[in-house]
Image (tube, rainbow, N blue to C red; front, top):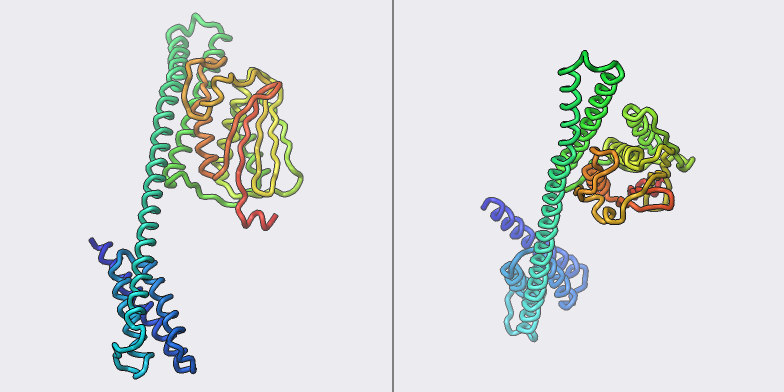
Length: 362
């Protein structure tokens, strides 16, 4: 109710302001020697259209029409400062202004309703996308967490229940398995916190600031090598200084996810290529491996966070949730992410758009 009263008051003030401004401008024309009533009528008509555009319903437009006709009659028609209903064309002027007000109000009301309907539909679609993402994440988490947790429990139980019956090599292998699965679970938690961070920023928007691409890439590779010390990555990027707006931590997470997937799921120990290219509108990042590629059946659903039951060769580290989070991050930045097979492996590519200021600077 308070908002409605505030909106009504703002429309009343706007209407009064428009009529006062039109009257002031008309007096200026009139006393400067331009006493052509037609020109003054045009000024009031413009004020009338603006009033109808910025107010709701028909009431303010009708009241403004009455005032406009009365003002032209009273202030600017002979005898001045008197109402003269015998003026030639007076009813036509009134009807014309009233018609302009009604037509403008009807058009703007229809446009406002259409915009409201579009906004409501977009809101519903965005909410549906968020619900779909939530459901996919829940499915992926329930699938991806179960196996590494079971592995950790099994390895630790074997170690604790029969420590004397295990050789040093077997004990080391069990501890190494526990460490590997624990690191992967930590990565999963980081991914989930990433999604929470994006959702907390409302409507899939992120706070971006200009970042040096080379520094972001270096930080991502350094973090990944703490998990996979033997990973080999070849970076190919422009020699020019490259800076684009992004959330550096989120983009590092995308790079880590994609490069880790390329190392673990490709079935290849060949070096991974990270290729960065610049265009006038965006910067693209391509991660290429030399492995088995991606099955054609999985490609259409690869970024949806769904598990198709086919599994992966490593047995427990499903890639669904990681890729779903990558897509969420890139879309929140206004970019795109795609996957495709090459002759000797798979390639994941994502783009980050340049802001206008960055393009002008470059």
